[in-house]
Length: 310
Image 1 (cartoon, rainbow, N blue to C red):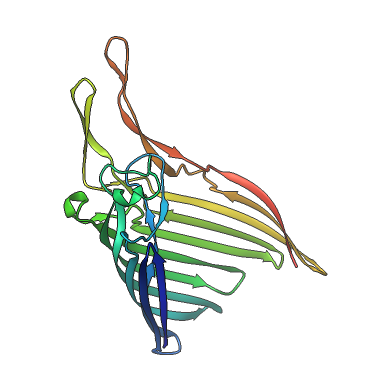
Image 2 (cartoon, rainbow, N blue to C red):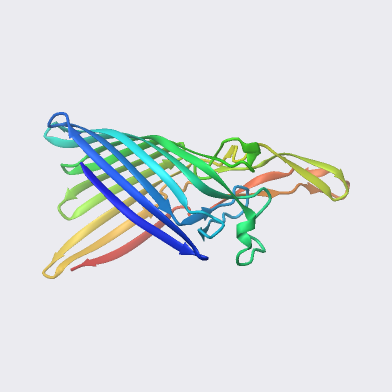
């Protein structure tokens, strides 16, 4: 059992925010191979991540707690099981952990507000405060010995928010709510100096808010009808990376030459979405309907590197 107690504080605008943060971690060995784990922690964060939930270029801002904006407070509990396996002369490690994290004093932009044309101090009038919950389960399997090693991690998670002034007071998913998250890493040593490694990652797409319909009531009077907040999912994010490394031993250390390929199959992962208006020809006929367009970054990128280790 490992316990701790931390006292932190934040002073701003003649306002003091003290915080007592206990934490406890415990492990119980059922057998030589099986172990139960449990943990609890109370945390306080004195800066807020302020994100836009609509379409367009992503704008994530870090803003501090102030006399009007209280710091975030969270409680996190976790319960897990772990086992060490030995098969075919190899060592494996398996673990599963479930967690639950309620949060309060979170911030979001008010409806229609953004960071544009915002001066110092004005951002406080453009946000609203609410609460959130993050919970899920994490599965981890690792091969620790032999010429071929690696691990597989999978997380099933939810991250929701509720603000009295947003989404009619109903719960909605956070922008970075990621239902499924997978990481697969495999490393193989052809020799003590030559190693090939591959990494594949997958994640559910970010949540965002899109207009479900658009109305024109008159010249220049166009209105968008939005559904629930963050009710649309962008395309999933996934990619595969490869790295081939050759190590040369020197009297003074090592030289590592690497050939890497980022995003091997050149996945067009979404960076942001924007609205493209319809095109109307001179006869008043729509030649191209309005649509949402996706912008992607970083296709396949090869690279070479040389590292010196002393």
